[in-house]
Image (cartoon, rainbow, N blue to C red; front, side, top):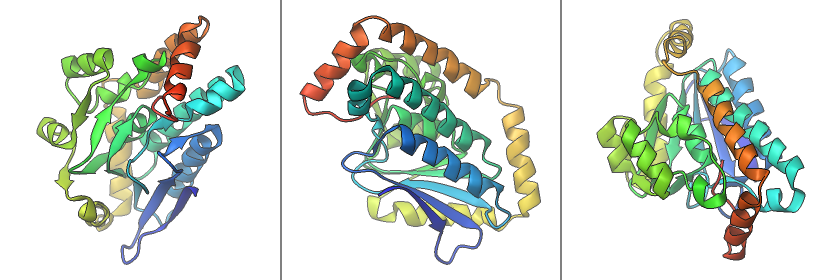
Length: 254
């Protein structure tokens, strides 16, 4: 359990990073940094041409481990915010293309991972959302804005509504929507197409595409995080998180 990685079977140059943190893939501080370190290490390897980020369980990622924040207070809050920033940046800056294979729920920090990926494939049951305002936090609108149009993003932020994989496919941010049983294989098929290209050209393509992005995703996300800290200086965030935990929740944030 945790963050694991390895080379995909039968796919030269394709590495897989797998999130496996039961019950809902809500990541604690260590797991966010582990994810960041793993993605950066793979991207720096000459043997790797594409990285797939996938997950075990019924959902891709439920965001941060809210129970850890409630248990450890500001230490965990600072840690998880830095960990999220590190993981999102690692995906964005990975020297090779990153493909996210998304099933079930993708919430909070999961949006940060997926929104910074180069390619997204999703299963028919996948949903995407930022329930941050319900947890007394903000963040990852930077990444949601890369998945849906501006006003859709704002409505989703204010209402905590989710969008389906089909909606994101319609917007053009999800490449393929497939049955859950075909998700990982589809991600590998796309990865194999990229891995078959000249690796030097693909690495330069990734670097050049990042260079022409209209938004600096790292600075934009850190700006958002400042408002999360502001909210945490009042009682509103603590009360919202505790109410969520009292209802049996364990994740959904970023």
